Length: 533
Image 1 (cartoon, rainbow, N blue to C red):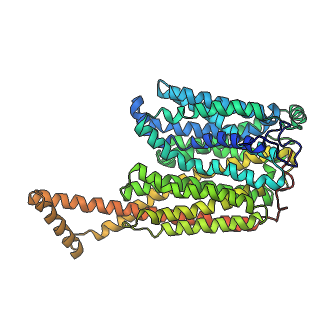
Image 2: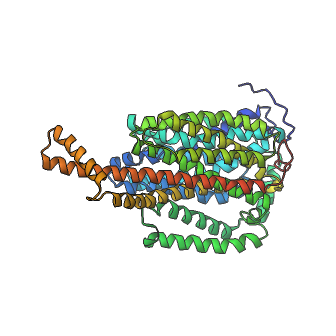
Image 3: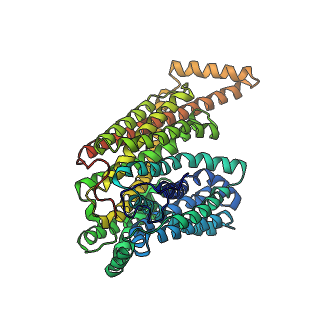
């Protein structure tokens, strides 16, 4: 790529380096891609981690939980630290910590060490993504920010799709350690290049001096970090631990609730809070926050549960299930850049509505699946989803900054990313619960039809019994095998119906973004007026 200067109309855009800002944008997007990738890549490796370290899979699942909790906590402090230390310095510290902890995770001798390194990795990764958005705001003028956020959007939206497939392949063909070690060479190269080409914006010294004068909002940080961290534990561990039947979950739910109740008046009344919650109370930013919450829920829930559906009920291999996501991922990447250009000409609210409707149609299509559907039917639904997500993701990032004071764009980035992360956890939690409870419901209804007095049941039982006797079983063995086969079919059908119910729920979640989007005011096209620094 050429490193010639691009006219950006932004004084701080290239930081005075004479470097093409797109090169810098690609580097920070690559670092963000690694961080988001690590939210999903370890999920499929959990059985391998459990086996390799001699622990249960439930214990190994803390590898995911600790990362998410640390990630949520550091988000609250990222805006303050970025302004205090400078965006470049803070970004490089986070990237360095993320890369080092990835290396340590790959060589962890036991589970406790791995959990410690994953906490470090979550802290490093959690600080990178919101600062990356602020760096892009510094680099580009309003007319080009849509395209820049499209590049960033590719990293954030495609990474969760790539994660499970890449993690499964590495675990199957190399070792689970490479789910972490793969970050190391990329991280080292990104650090070296970013340190060379990125400069602090001209306002960095004044921002740092101002931040030192304000002081660190210790209580605000503790309250918000406790709320998000405890909530993440509840959402991630709730289903496995029987929700409020577990004293552990009840304790963390109470802690999260108390922290939330206390942080609201503190954040609304303090002069210089660590996160200005008053932004969420505004119509524009509040609607954007809620839309990003729903987008996060859709993105991760569909990425996690569609492969699970086709493996469990359609007999797909892990590789084929991963390939099912690939067409949608390719479409998403292409659409990001298309929407990046269109966003300069069309109001964000209309693009978001179009995206929400397309996603809802995609989810509706999945409510009509049946056992004999081919690969491309489900791939087409995924492609439709891949068209819809960028129509929300790119304009919502631009619209969320509209009307925000330049001094608070770091906080806006932190809040939007907190919405995406929390929405992802909420979406996965909701779908997990729908699958569990609706499968039980459907199984009980189906069992009502499997009664000895039913002619259909007796005919089916006889046919299956005849099949097993024809294949060498005695009459008694064949009868028992037939009953077991029918029971397995009932269970599989109940699971299948539960997935269709889950897609109905995801469709409704997507449609909930429509009135929120329509409430957005019109913005100055070409980019929000107050994103620069």
